[in-house]
Length: 208
Image (cartoon, rainbow, N blue to C red; front, side):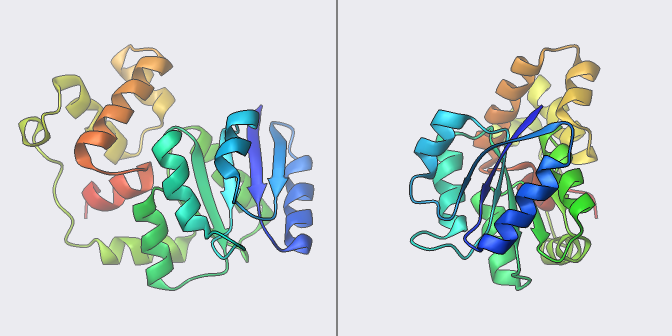
């Protein structure tokens, strides 16, 4: 089961998300909140795999919450689900560490697919958002040489596979390593490259 949580202040849309998740046979809703003021404590207690979060929330923005969460729980996958299509919000969320970005007008199936993709270690975005991100980072850098960021040979190999789009599970199998070892390598890569999510990594180093 994929343990999932919702942070959404609009009651009707939160109810809709709950219904969507309840109709999936491999997704479990572990908590829902209308704000993210105590989000770290909530995640400590319920340990969700994927967190669905709006941006415009009372008290603290979803983007600020992403920064706070990723500093403590870099492994939790965060899907921004919002109405905002403007570039500033999109890039701020990705740079903060969001792993995916969908719009509230996206279909229920797209939301479910995104949850599963994030759980597998992939990035997931609405098509329009992905286009904006790729255009914004059009002049992105090539994959760095290992010595440029003090990457180990294994970390450099994993970085290439991440950029190619393989899931964490696929990379672990390819490299004959355990999921725990894979997660440790990814954490080290993120720290050395100063990125906070798979989405940011793909945007920065993906192929043109």
